[in-house]
Structures are given as structure tokens and as C-alpha cells.
Length: 355
Image (cartoon, rainbow, N blue to C red; front, side):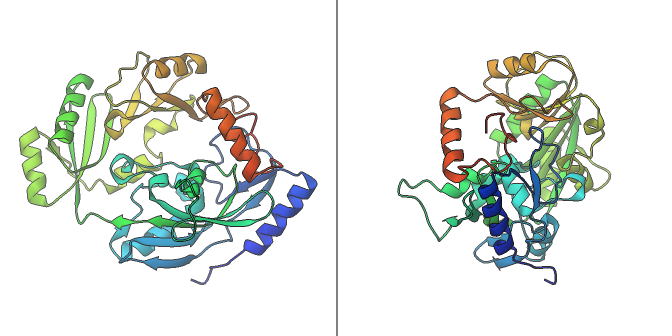
């Protein structure tokens, strides 16, 4: 396309200079997730101009693109062939790049059924903290232990290196999707959703707030009507694609609150003993909580239910935003940081204070 551009050489020069001068870099794409993680530090280094689809093989279900390629451009190309990014990445403020989607590791409403960004990442080209360009995964390289090193970069928030290119597995887009609704108190709602799951209903997204629930399913109209009748669900009068897109991009009214917004990952059946309105996705596996309760209290309650909590928005970004790691995991994370970014120039402190 007309805006395609390979900025690898200039990015490599910028990294080598920063490493030599020990200057931290704030690595970003569109900056649509600049609110996420601890307070940003360093000189901005944008990948927004490093863009373009390098190859797309619909029959092989693989697309390779430069990291600054807009998500919208990727999704439009896939849609022409009836395919999609199965992890349904968010477009915060209507923006976002494919590199940023992988670096943040966030999936949308389809995530439990379509897989995570890490699951779909086949390979990468990476610029490390020494200014070296490395290739991992896909058809290029796997380490001797058999672990795909490219997957380390999914969710790393750019702290281990700069993604230059990503190769991603894509999936066919459902021919038809429908949204059905029902009202029920939480215990009855979870029981119904669980029943639908174990009975093979083709769910692709769920939403629950207060006693109002929606379920997105991928099937024929006849199958939709059978499901609707069998489970006593209500049809939605209007098309709901905009609703699910708004949920994905946090345009729903719930996300407009000014209180700190927590992203809670829990076993779907876990009961969380905390006051406040909770918005549920993923059949209860993902929960959003806007509250002014102390961080220590929230994390303690979530840990008791074998979950973890991230302070997603509107919090004090000078403190820890991500859930505390086990000490052994922390040691491993620091070792990885030392290998990929020995001078600590990439997004320092974005994840945790020490690295």
C-alpha cells in the first residue's frame, strides 16, 4: 500500500545510539495503550511509520506485517478473504497497531474461544537492546529446548525488545453471528452459561452486568432459533456488532467511570466477596471492577480465589499496576531482561519498578 515503509535501519540506529548513551526509550505504536502499566519514562520512539503487510497467505492462514501496521488495515485485508484475528484485539480510542496488540497481549470478547495473542503468534523479527535484529519462531528459528521464544514478547509491553515484524495465525470469520439475551441473578446466570458450554453451544462472547446478560453465538439462523428456544433466551431487536465492538474497545458506559478500573482474571466459578458493580466477560473468567478500594485488599481477595488483578486504568501509576509475581518468576524475568536488553533502555519500569 502507499503508506508502506520499512524503518528497520533508522530504528536500529536509534537503539544503538540510546544503548551507547544509556538513554531510556519509550517504545510505542499509536500510543493507544499509553495508559496501561506503570508511568511511562524515556524518549519516545514511535513505530507508527514502520508499517505494511509483508505477506498474506489466506490458504495458509498466516499474515506477516510490520509492527506499526494499523490493526484496521490488517483486519480489512483479512475481511476481504473471510478471515479474522481470532483474539479480537481492542482498538482503544479507535487506534492501535499489530505490534502494540501483540506487545500488550490483550484479547477481546472472543479471546477464550479464539485464543490469546500469544497462542496465535507464529514468529517475529525483533530489535534487541544491543541493536541486533533477531528472528524467532515460524519457519525461521526455534531454540534447542523447543520453546518458541517469539511468544515471550506477547504481553512483554516492549520491555524485552522492539517488534519489527510479526507473523500471526488467522482463522476463518464465522459466516453468521447472533446475540441472545436473558435476565437472571448471578448464580442462575452462571449455571445457565455453564450448561450452554458443556452442551456445545457455539459461544464466541459473553457479557454480564447486574442481572443483564448477553451471549454471542456463531451458527446458522436455524441453530440460533433452536438455542434460543431450548434455553429460554431472548432475541435482540437490533444488530449487536456495535455492542461487542464497544465492549472490546471499552466504549461501554461502565468504562467511563473515574474510579480506578481493575482487570481481574479468575476461575469462572470463583465467588469474589467484594462490594461494587462488576462487569463480567468470558463466562466469568474476566471481570472488570471500578472501585476506590485499596489495591492490597483487592489483590488479597483475588489471590484467595487463585486469580490475579491488574490495575488497568485511572490508578496511581507510580505504584505497581500488575499483580505481584512469585520471587522465582521475578528472577527469571530479570534474567530475560538482562539477555534481551542489557542496558535497560526499553520501556524501563513499564511492567514493574525494578525492570
